Image 1 (spheres, rainbow, N blue to C red):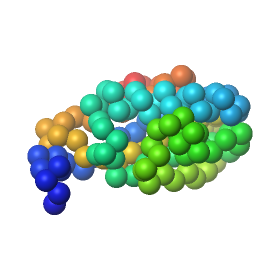
Image 2 (cartoon, helix red, strand yellow):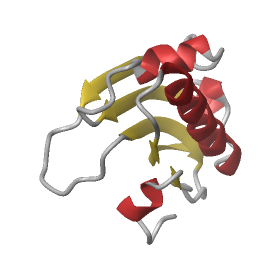
Image 3 (cartoon, rainbow, N blue to C red):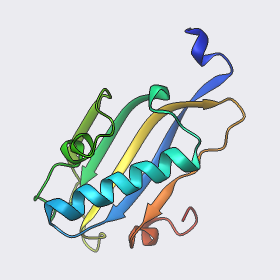
Length: 125
């Protein structure tokens, strides 16, 4: 194990955000979600292993991975985006994220749900 990960443990952080199907809004919302996850978890990009986005089928104006990179964030990270499986009555216009990262061993992950996505997990919002 690398020295920089001594005293750290692998965690998975969750987050989600609703946005308009517009390039500018997708970029802004993805960047804000990412920044909030890093801030609330005292997380540095160097401690991120990978990041997976999913998008609902109604969001096709911009890929969230491209949006994150174009915002100047996550440029050296392993990013992946997939389309969310369709389910009746699911929350529309939603981007979800799963971040695998190293936090302090005694850390408590803080998940982030924003801009209407709080409805997905009111217990974590």
